[in-house]
Amino acid sequence: MIEQAVNVANKAHSGQYRKGTNIAYIIHPLEAGAIASSILTQLGKYDEEVISASFLHDVLEDTEMTENDLLENFSERTVFLVKEQSENKAHSWKQRKLHTINHLKEINDIDVKVVHLADKLSNMRSIHRDYKKLGDKLWERFNEKRKSEQGWYYKSLVESLVDLKGTNEYYEFEKLVDNIFSWFLAVSFLFY
Image (cartoon, rainbow, N blue to C red; front, side, top):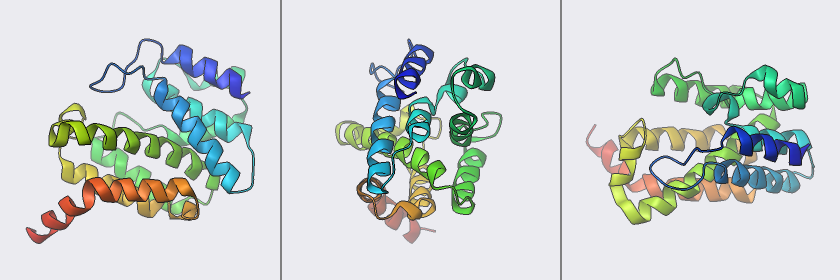
């Protein structure tokens, strides 16, 4: 199942690149799958559906692939986990992010949180790496260009994913978010 998920993700994301880079997009889902596998190991479980969903987490949101396409190849649980990761692009950036934050706080399904942390940690690693090179110019590549809003989102995710606090990946995510946003958010708070 995992090999099939990698192949499907690779085909679906063919020709796509990470925002503002020449890095093939598939690198992100591959990293997310590896992160999910590591988190699951620390939780004392192995789950091919969760790992597969991590590889596939962006196919419904960012490619032509449909839910029915996924159901032809994967279990309902895997497709559910992918759908839980997908945002409704008809809503504004703020609405989508607020929904994600609140949903993660309310849901008791640890597997949904594993897929989210895998995705968000991969994103934060990329942001951290590029921020060291580009500084605040980095935010120009995103739909939401204000660092304060990005900081609000990622800080809120740290709180929403607290159920995974005992894992190395949660600690790394929290540390990277802190590294990029804490000073900025503290200074911003002083001016409100």
